[in-house]
Amino acid sequence: MKFGRVALLLVAATALQFFVGGSSHRAAWPIDCFLIATAVVARSGNPSRALLVGGALGFLEDAFTQELLGMNAFAKAALGYVFAVLSVRVALGGSWAVGGALAVASLVNDGIVALLSVLLMRSPLVLLSREDLWRAAATGITGGIVEAAREFPWREWWKRRLLRRLR
Amino acid sequence: MSSSSVEIATGRSRRSGLLLVCVLVFCVLLLSAQAPGGGKRRGSLLQSWILSVAAPVGRAVLLVSRGVSGLADSTSEAFSARAENVRLKRDLTAKNQELFRLRAEVSQAARERLLLSGGAALPNVQMAAPVLLIESRAGVQSALVGVGSSSGARPGSPIAVPEGLVGRLVTVGATVSRAQLLLDASAAVGARIVRTQELGVVRGDGRGGMRLNNVPTTSRVAAGDAIESAGIDGIYPRGVAIGRVASVAKGSDLFLEIRVAPAAQFSRLSDVLLLAPSPAIPGAAGGGRSGGP
Image (tube, rainbow over all chains, first blue to last red; front, side):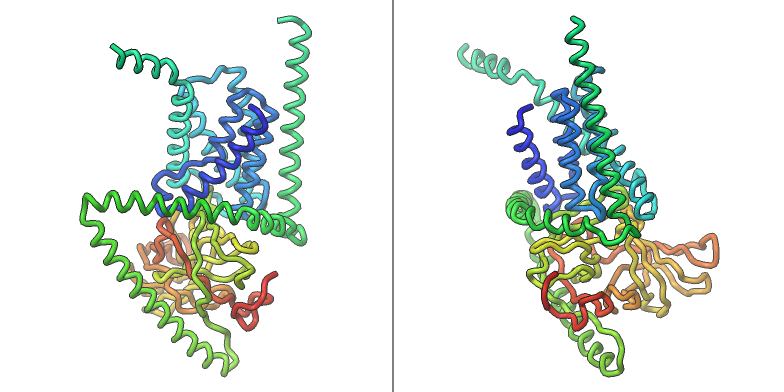
């Protein structure tokens, strides 16, 4: 993925996060836009780029929402790397697989942040709360839909549609 | 695959592995430098800069988000009697705001009396601010609020809605600040049960609820009792609603296990009121709108 596209993705993910988080209906579909953006970059199969983008997005998320900078950066950099390696070596494919992987990744991200909070801030350990599970589900489903839309043969579909109309 | 291409692939894999280790080590070092007890927090200054830079994006997107939300709402209203409901809600909010203002005025009068007797200060509403973003992750419940040091906000300033207390500002940028919500697993506020006048500590459970701790088993507290801030923690003002007792159970030791339903609707927050910081917070003496960092 080219640098310009990565930068565009970064801005889009931030804007979408604000869009969802600023809405009064935010609890209805609480997707983790930063994680989806990390997965999109990782899908290209370059682990270095994926972990750097994941780290940058996590850092941005920390600045907006966390007491300490670096917790989400740590989690998302590691997840970006794992995603990229998986997409190259295991040939992870299909919207179901991508959606499931994203849902699990969202929970892993929460787990890493919770553990770091316990270690560094002595916060109570909160794992698998209802909100975390709902976000994991929403992120997974959204990621699955994005993957399905990416894989869908739009050009052929459009051509077939035109042919049908001509007949 | 030829041997040269295998070597290139192995080299690339090694490089990315090394990069991963470097990034993770950098994150750990950054976190260690900011961890409580590690001296002055450098992260909050950086965070404050990032918040200031991101403020225009946040505000612009908020406008779009509110517009889309409003459009979605009005579309659904066309098919139901929701418009009437919205009007009634608006009326109720206006009434609540009036109540909040009156309460603040009563608090102000009480504050003056307390000041005369050498007591602590009580709240006064400074301004209203939009909520730009609410995040809830792994027990951390925080919000980005569209108010900053340029309009007199300071770290530690409590935020509330007419229904009750919401939280406090933690990191303050020039025009945007980050707030810790009462639902956060690390948040705590000194509280009083209105009916029995007993004191306790309300803590967020990080899962959308709150608990009232340190209330002895001899207490007469019952489900439905109102809980308000006690003003004993040096952060939150006295007499602001926190919630109602949802359930009372015997704890494992000398204290009751009390669950509290929050008064404020955290999932539907759109605007909050900024209260003057407690005089106990450094630099907040005299309350009011003075200065930025």
